[in-house]
Structures are given as structure tokens and as C-alpha cells.
Image 1: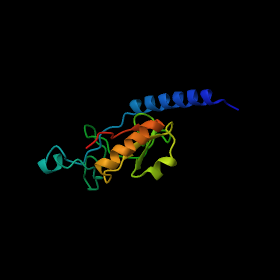
Image 2: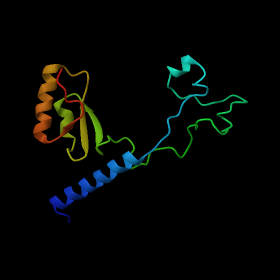
Image 3: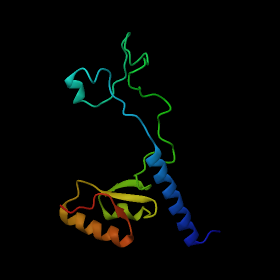
Length: 138
């Protein structure tokens, strides 16, 4: 069996490796067809799959931006993780904290939580050693 300090060291090394993987991941920005031609498309950054018969983007012609397809996805090890390497969790009460582990989770306090309760939650979370992503007090 591994002792507790060795387990923590392994988790720290794993998180460090995951952080490096997140930084290295280079994904192009997928933009809709003809976004450079029409001002209304410049203000709307959402990707739309090109479907036109003669669409140059769909035909993957040289000089056109890449289209989203299989292969650009995120690795399973880092998918859904915070850049710190921890899994993000939204909490709204003290009950939610009981299920979490400070070594694996980073906490976001729900926007529905008021100021007084937010301060209480921040105190409890900091005592238990959690990282809080949105710790500012309103």
C-alpha cells in the first residue's frame, strides 16, 4: 500500500502533467463561413457548419480557415478540467462540500448564493483547504 505522503506526491505530479497538457493543447479558432465579409458575422462568433454546394470552406480549399471535425477534440485526461488541473464543481450549500475532495476539486460558488452566505462558505472552504475560483465577496 502507498502511504499518504506518497499518494499526495503522485497527485501533485499528475496535476502538473495535466496542466502542461492543457497549455500545450493548440486548437484553432473555428469561425463561420464568410465571417470576414459581413459585419453581422464578425459580431457573432458562433461556428456554423458550411453546407452550401459551392462553399469554399466546405471544400477545404487552400487559404480558407479550418472547419471543426473529428481529431480536434480534447484528450480524455484533461477534458472538463480547470487550467489548474482540478475538476470544477459549483456549490450552493454546505451539504455540497461534504462530497468533495480538496485534492481533486476546485470550487465555484453559485451566483444564486447571497453575500452573507457566500462569506460563510468561503470561510468553511478555506478551512478545509479548497481552492475557490470565484472567491470575491460582493
